[in-house]
Every structure is written in C-alpha cells, then in structure tokens.
Picture 1 (cartoon, rainbow, N blue to C red):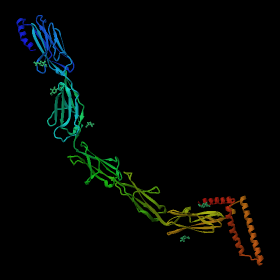
Picture 2: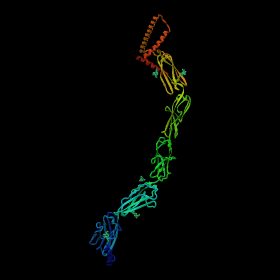
Picture 3: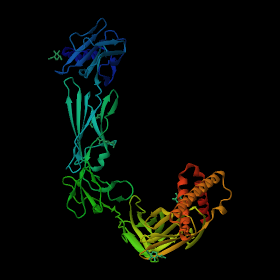
Length: 618
Ligand SMILES: *[C@@H]1O[C@H](CO)[C@@H](O)[C@H](O)[C@H]1NC(C)=O
Ligand SMILES: *[C@@H]1O[C@H](CO)[C@@H](O)[C@H](O)[C@H]1NC(C)=O
Ligand SMILES: *[C@@H]1O[C@H](CO)[C@@H](O)[C@H](O)[C@H]1NC(C)=O
Ligand SMILES: *[C@@H]1O[C@H](CO)[C@@H](O)[C@H](O)[C@H]1NC(C)=O
Ligand SMILES: *[C@@H]1O[C@H](CO)[C@@H](O)[C@H](O)[C@H]1NC(C)=O
C-alpha cells in the first residue's frame, strides 16, 4: 500500500534518531521458489532483529505485485495482537502464513500459472527499523509428449533446397518448451541450404504454451534408410527434462541409376523350345518404376507387366539379347539392363537311307542319323531294343539275313536330357533262299513204321520271300499243316502218312535262286516195330480178316457166277489188279476205323511214335 511505503523513511528516521545506532533487522530470503502447477508453494523468510529486546511490536506483512496494473497488493498482516489475511485478493482463500520469532512462511496452495509473480515480505520492528525481501514464484507445467508427422508423399532428391520432411508439436507446456530435431540420433541444426527449422509458439487461452516445429531438409538418396525424430525439452523445478517422439522415416524418391535384368524362371537349367520363360528387371530407383522391354536392335516394345516379361512357348527365334529400361520421367534413358537368352532346340532326326532300304547279301552299308541341335548331340542305334552302335554313323558290313530288321537311332543331349528324338530305317537283305534249321543238311534220312505219320518241315530265309513247293513220291496221303511267313523267312510243314518208302523233296525258291532238301523216309513194317498185339488190336485184326474173307467170298461168288454164264475161266493180270485194289480198300477201312472210339489206343500209339521220330530228328 502506498501509505505503508510512505511510512518507511519516517520509521527509519525515528530509529536513527531515537534508537541506539547498532539496532537493526536482518532478513534472508530465496530469490525464487519453483513449483509444479497445482502443487503448494512455500515462500519462507528468515529474519533477525539485533540489539536490545525489540521483538515486541514486530509487524509482518506479505504483498504481491499485481499482474494487470503492476501495483503492490497486500495479502497478509500481523502484529502483536492481530494476524489477518486480507479479503478480496486473488489469494484470500489460498494462502496461509505461519511465523515465529525468526521465520515467516507463506504457503500458497493449488498454484496456478497466474501465480508466477513476485511476492514481498516486509518486517517492521519499532526501534530496530525494517527490512524487505522479494521472491519470484516460478510455476512449471510439462507439455504433452511430442507428436511427429512425416510428409506422406515421397520426397524427391532432385528438389532444389530443403523440402518439408516432418512437423512436430508439443502442446500445453509452461514455460515455453523447445523442440530439437534428430536424424538417426544426431541433432539437426539449422544449416542454410540444408536444414531449416521453423518454430511457431502459441500461447493458449489457458496460459499454456504450444510449440509447433517444421523440419525442412535437403534429402539425399541415403535418407531412404534414415529415420527422423523430434525431442521436446522443458524446464521442471531445478531440472530440464526431455521426451522424444516416435521415429519416422520418409520415402525418398530418386531416379534409377542401375538396372539388372535376369531370368526368373526356369530358375535352373537351360531353356529349350516350348518352355515358358520369365525375365525380371529391377532398378535401384524409388519408387520402383515400370520397365519397357525390347530385344537388342529391335525397336518393337515387348508386351510386359511392370518388371516382368513373360515369353510363352519360346522357340529358337526368341534367342537373343534382351534389354529393359525404366519408364520414369526425366530419367536418364541410357540406364538399361541386358541379358542374353539362348533357346536350345533339337530337330527331328533324319536317317539316311530313308524308311526302307534293300541291300544284297554280302554288301556293306553306312546308315547316318543326324538331328540339328544347338547343343552337342549323342547318338545311339538300337535293333529290337538292343544297342547296336554309337555315333551318328552305323556301318552294316557283309549283310546277311540276320542284318534284316528295323534300326532305330536315338539322339539325346547330354546337357538337356529333356530333349530327345528318334529316327529309323528298315533294312531288308535280298538274296536267294537259304534253308535253315535241322542242321541245314540238304538230305535227311528217316524211318517210319508203315501207317505212321511224319511231319516234314522246311524253312528258308530269303528276299523276296521264298516259295516252298513239295514233291512227294511214295505216299498219296500228305497235306500241309503249317504255312507261315514273315518278312525274313517262310516255313512249310507237311504231314505225310507213310505207306511205303517215301521221298519228299522240298524246293524253296525265289527270283534269285532255289535250294532243295530231300527227305528219304524208309517205311518199316509194322511187325518189326510193334511187338505183341494188345488184345484190342488182336480182335480188330480178326474182324479185318473176317471182312476180307467175306469180300473174297463175294468176289469168288461173282467170279463163279461169271464163269457159269460165259463158261470160261480167264486167269492172269485182272486178278492181280483186284489184289492191289484190296490193299486200297484195306486203307479205306483203317481210316474209317480211326473214327471208331475203340481205335483211340491205336491213334495214341501213332502219336507217340511220331514224337519219338521228331526227337530223333533233332
Ligand atoms: C489493480 O488491480 C487489482 C486487481 O488486479 C485491483 O484490485 C486494484 O484496485 C487495482 N489498482 C488500481 C490502482 O487500479
Ligand atoms: C522405414 O524404414 C524401415 C527400415 O529401414 C523400413 O522397414 C520401413 O519400411 C520404412 N518405412 C517407410 C514408410 O519408409
Ligand atoms: C530452449 O532454447 C533456448 C534458446 O536456445 C534456451 O535458452 C533454453 O534454455 C531452452 N530451453 C530448454 C528447456 O532447453
Ligand atoms: C525248284 O523250283 C524252281 C522254281 O519253280 C525251279 O526253277 C527249280 O528247277 C526247282 N528245283 C528242283 C531241284 O526241282
Ligand atoms: C504235325 O504238325 C501238326 C501241326 O503242327 C500237329 O498237329 C501234328 O500233331 C503233328 N504230327 C506229328 C506226327 O508230329
């Protein structure tokens, strides 16, 4: 109060006048008191009054400097008889003062931002004079954690000067917080042309300070892997604290300087015709550009998607050098990727001679088998599934009928086993007939019991296919049971019933010659080969005899009748003829008998004998 101030010189004057010279008031105070918003602040003042006992009549007063009109306002007054908090001040309800003879403490509860003011303490002693101390109350409020926001669009390294990279905000602090920027934990200081930091401090209506900071930075390609963060620093009672924001990275855009082109699939191995091939192109630019593909020295742009070129069912025509270039504005078009694609192939095998070749016996022939390929080929020859030669030439020397057949050549690629091809030639050796089998003898002698059956076989190689004819003398009953022919040989088997010594001539012939084989069959009488008759055979014989007798009787009867009619008897050749006829009749009867089930044993016996003969022949 103005009135209090005016009393100071008067009191001092009175003191110097009426008190002893050494009496005085000494006061110790704090320069400032620091406190968090909302907490209680204590401002304490120590005092000492020296001289005689002048403690009585001490007056203690607390004042504050008002904010608006910068005047001093009393908050508290006490003397020997009175202790009083002034009414109608900002502090009437929030302060408390306790004092003793050395100290007075002002406590302010629920400190507000507006409490950051200077507080005065005034001690008056009647005779020792007075003293005054002032203390600044400082209030602190930590800001909220900083919030960082990176630029969402990519930043191009070609931008001139620093570009906005991120902004950071720290809100509601007191006093004003500071913001510091970091790139990979290194603080960024404002550097002309490289780093700009723009800060805007806002005083909020509630008294807090908010700081918004913008970082402008000259990005380079290396920043694609860098992260940025901001840090807020603020004062708290007797300390400085810091809080870091989260880290962000920015997408840095830069042009492609290098491009690589490679075969993505097939991953391993060589490319062959018919494969699907995928080529991929990649550059070091960001964002990854699209690419255009072409073949070297061909202007035509190939149909691709982004960074892939897909070639389906490639052929040898697709071999060549492929290139890819990034498709980006204002980029260096000289940057390109390149690779060579080789499509391997194996053409169908060509065999010479073609398809079918006829050669003469004893001749030589060289067959060749070739298949055009981009790789080294390997050729193998097979006949009837068996290997007969290697290499693309097959020499057939001194041709024989065994040379006849189909020759298959197979061409393979060592480094690309998936590719293989085949070709073939059918070789036929021509020549005169050549009898085969049964030791190749031209004359054979055999024995057979009278009435027995022999199978005579004649087989011959030859080209053209030999015809087989039989000339059989001595037996009327023979017929061909087997007639067979393939491209190499012909065979004929005749079944001959032996009635007497028989000569069978087999003539095998074709345009180029003929050969014959003679079978001489000696007929052996039945008795000598078949020892005792079985009872069944005996009875059969008796029946035959009876029939013969009856026939004789009939003949005799007719002769007698004839003689009786003509009255003469002629003796001679006609009788003999009858006898031969008898033989023929006997044959007929035997044949009939064979159909009789009772004759089975006899037939069986004959088969057994024929088997025996066959095994003897061999
Ligand atoms: C100064 O302001 C305070 C309130 O802040 C008020 O109580 C006081 O009357 C004012 N004094 C003058 C001289 O205007
Ligand atoms: C930030 O960087 C990390 C690691 O370097 C990376 O994995 C991430 O994708 C990047 N994010 C952006 C938005 O660039
Ligand atoms: C904020 O920055 C100013 C100026 O550089 C400095 O004087 C002050 O001490 C800083 N405050 C904090 C809390 O670091
Ligand atoms: C075999 O038959 C052929 C052709 O019919 C004939 O030319 C040849 O003289 C015959 N050979 C004999 C020995 O009969
Ligand atoms: C002769 O051959 C034919 C046909 O192969 C066969 O049925 C028959 O039993 C054979 N005869 C003899 C006596 O081997």
